[in-house]
Amino acid sequence: MVAINSGGGATVYEEIEFEADQFSTGGTPHSTQDNIMGTSEDAVFQSERYGAFSYQVPVTPGTYSVELLFAEIYETMAGARSFNVKIEGRTVLSEVDLYSLSGHDGVYTYQADSAAVNDGTLDISVESIVGNGKISGFVVYSPDGELKAPPPGPGGSLPVVPSAGCGKPRPNLGTASSPIAITQYNHFYVKLPNNYDPNTPYKLTFVFHHSSSDTNGIISWGERSSGLEQQGALSTSIMVYPRARQTSGSGWRGWDEPMFEPLYNKVTSELCVDKSRVFALGYSSGGDYTSLIGCEHGDKLTAIVPVATKDVAGFPLNVSQRNCKDKVAAIVIHGAKDSAVGAQGGPATTNFYRTLNGCSAESDPVPGYTDSLSNCVKYRGCQAGGEVFFCNHNNPEYSNTYHGYPPFTGKMAWDYFKSF
Image (cartoon, rainbow, N blue to C red; front, top):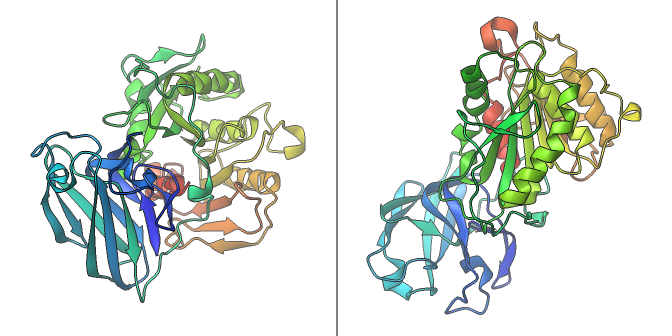
């Protein structure tokens, strides 16, 4: 059995432990403090995911029943909301009008039985007809199947830690064409989830560009080539795209290190962020910087993904020579034949984080990423919260230099970020 609190954190309902929202693509989280009619255990019905969205719950082959949980916590009249729910492509609920079924802030549940799954994921999708479709939570049961665990991570066990920006009006934090200065030399812009709710703590993801003199190129390699937004990151994460002091030439360098703390402080003080779920991904010199802040600012970050990385002058990949704070999970991705920065950067970065996080030299293949174009392993024995993965891929991406974002990057990174 697995239970998910859509749009919310871990909770308990009818002695069932609900995990924090995960496995979703699309939609927007929202919550209320209203009392819910029809139950004395309000929490799971006080949050929701709404819009056009789906869940892909990783399961083994089997037959599944799904109990769907709803409460109309927004609309106050009949006809304002109508939606369909499909499970494994079969419509199980049609033209649902929750206000007509249970009124405002009232509980409604429905159980769908006998969904056969053979492809590795139980699919639940919501189609909006009038207004926005929604789900408050769901429980999956099976006599012969079971949940397939996502990549190891603390997952829903991490408490939600709202930032100082929660409850504040939505600010203007810049766009790609009009970024905001954070230091004399660095700028940044932000993309918020659709229908951003200032009372909902969101994941926060920083994406660091490669070296380029072309502003459009920086945007392309940040927003698009990283693959995170294509994986649905904007459904649950605030996305921050900083710019280096020197965008061309060497790109991100040691002199950019002082930029991160004021950037982090500004974003978390003005936007509603879950400070337990802050992530960073970067490519090439942006990967160097991602690795750098994973040590120097590990107390602010949950997980990092440095791609095609090398060390940074003044910040050696030696734990005894650095001032690392706390620990951070790391997925290091590097081309085994990288002709731009050499093949040695990825292994060196991986060994740095293995040492920092107390991992052994033994590793296991990562399911789904075992072919030569990904070739990912996870190291054993890492301290809690400090899992380390290494993908020493053989993908010739970026004009046969083996130095680009390999195509699996966005999915692997976002699936892992979602597991927290």
